[in-house]
Length: 312
Ligand code: MN
Ligand code: MN
Image (cartoon, rainbow, N blue to C red; front, top):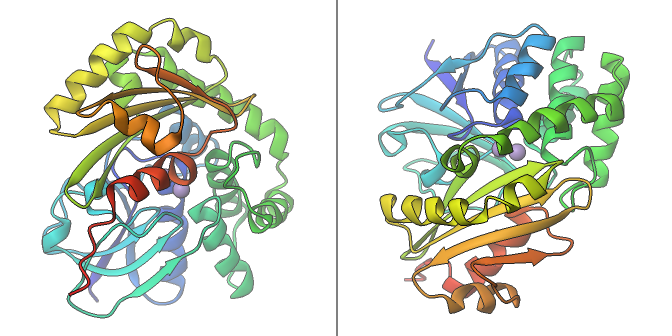
């Protein structure tokens, strides 16, 4: 039987890794030859989750040419494993905007604006009456907690809360306790070199002919990073040039206040204010109530630059 690789985005986070593991398992129980895989190194938060609940890191796939794939937790080519254009995508299970992928054949796509991909997969397990082990329940709960800042992010829906409650019950875990540990590990990302800070969770987007990169750091200690602002801006400029982007942003989210500091370098300095209605001061803006990249930073850019979808 053909091997199918279930894979999340590059620079994987907890949600990308645990959805790949849980969905591959789900597919195997339905007779597929599915293998959980990943498109990059595992971060400390994810490593903690895997070790604590007894899972190996999924198979590292550096390129996917000629392989059959199921994409989880992303659908944009710019965020996917190398060689995607020459792979065969069989399914997409995601909670992000549609980002322009085209396919040769009709495929199964499930995109739902939930707080995490783990939520969608947990729902399928529970509704399908498929046996959900304590360990799979635990890692799916971690996926929800990680993506929704412990159910506090503006992306968090009633469905996320409901699934989290059920998974906590099945795995015997305390959401707040687990959340505290994970926030602490997330914050470690913000304690590295400027380059690692920016790239640890950096996603690229294509809006028509404009390419934008946005790094996101969620931390309990944003002041540390704000104090490094000049070195972060210098490095952000390097990364923008290196990747040939028109604009590069770095979002530092204070996970207690759910506000963000956003750093910006762009070909046109007016883009930021036109998109967000906020003025940059010294390359930075403080944005109150903003903590989601996909829901609060990406949509205004898509509206400003256009989607590049041709209607002919
Ligand atoms: Mn993700
Ligand atoms: Mn996610």
